[in-house]
Amino acid sequence: MKKQIKLMSASVLTLIVAGALAPPASVLVEADDVTYPGWGAVGFQVPTDPTDPVDPENPSEPIDPDDPDQPGPPPGPGTPGPLSIDFASNFYFGSNNAISASNQTLNARLQPTLNDDGVAEERPNFVQVTDNRGTFAGWTLKVSATQFTVTDSSSPHHEEELGGAQMSWSNGTIVSTSRYPADGHTASHTFFPGNEVNAMWATEDNGAGTNLLRFGTTSGTTPNASSSVQLMVPGGAAREALYMSTITWSLQDVPPNGD
Image (cartoon, rainbow, N blue to C red; front, side):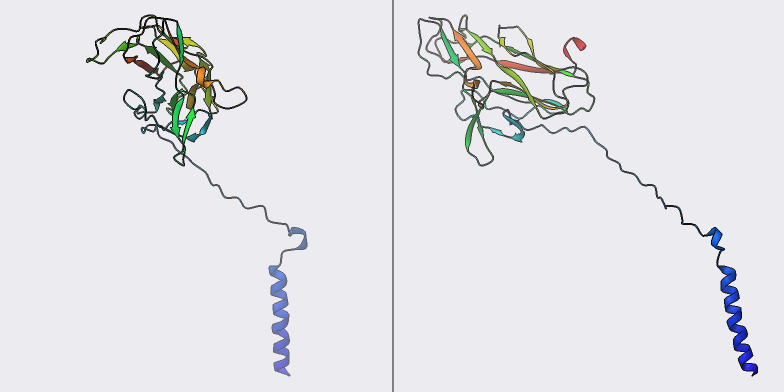
């Protein structure tokens, strides 16, 4: 009988303790959401490697400019640094043109390229600039050209100029995949020896990434690239020789006139 009383006492004590630990019904609430702070980070640095040329018809795709038949040195790699001239087409008007007593207008050959499969393709002539400085300060691409001159020292016409010849471009268009493309260019231009002009430029807050000045197009319903870079030769001016012109592209790290 005493043992039964002890067992009943232990049971009652358990109920009392459980009731004492449980909060009253009036104070039962749901817990607040638990939060934990986190963060994301990303950093950048100014690149120094040259930027490869891209397709002037599809600037999201790289190309390999291939120039097997050119009379001068092959195109080299782009200039180093975060603000660079990546590539500029050579303007080749052929070496077997007939001498004529009449004025002639010669079209520059299209830019030969190789695609990813090694297949030869033709693209518009173009010049390419990349701005990876991250400053959005703007820039100016300038160009000048010398008169066509016989540079072969073994030629009887060495150092003779192709008098009155005028090289020009037309149908210039800016091509870019950047959110902040270059915002200025010269659509048509005739070269005069010693005269430097602004070819393409970016004002402040523009011109980031890769930008191309393309002369005409090889796509669409009215392709015009084949006649967008031309050389006018006056009748009777040519001799039996190869004439060369030096084209100089220069890049400044400010917009035109510092604007």
